[in-house]
Length: 249
Image (cartoon, rainbow, N blue to C red):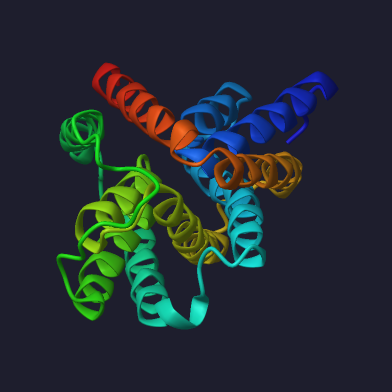
């Protein structure tokens, strides 16, 4: 696409801010998808290009956490596999059927998520009791949330954090680290499927991806340094903002 130079600059900056937000609480798509549509991209191209740029941010965030040993890929390999399969199926389906009905359901789920975290003072820097075998969790939630991210997307990070905290007993920092790793898996899988469908504008996606990469690194650093003090209020705020946006749509 032939865009004005200042539009490219704006898209890069939007990608950077979205990378920071995604690394901390998720919801960067609230910024990037409207920006891509405003730049004149057709909806299908906007979705595919958004997956390209968001993959950079999720890779940056997950690599930072991996380097700091806040998660270990070998211990979640079944979870990674199920997320991969779910995301591939979800992305294939969204290109062939209308997924707009999810707009009516997801806002209520996100509001419930925000309420849960607001009213749960115990959620913090300490692990809680595990309520489900990890193997069962991997198959069920890896498949479901992976599918959701490939099929629709908004709030994926929030759903991962909620699942890890409420069922696995992870503290918020640990849950956020794992959610970034799995978000990268579903992002890159979905990207590959969109690529096969030819729904990516590379110049725009790579430029925003550079911003996402920088933002993801910054956000992940803040997560490790600030912990619950930063994550919890942002999770609640992003969930409510996403709910309002989906209601308005």
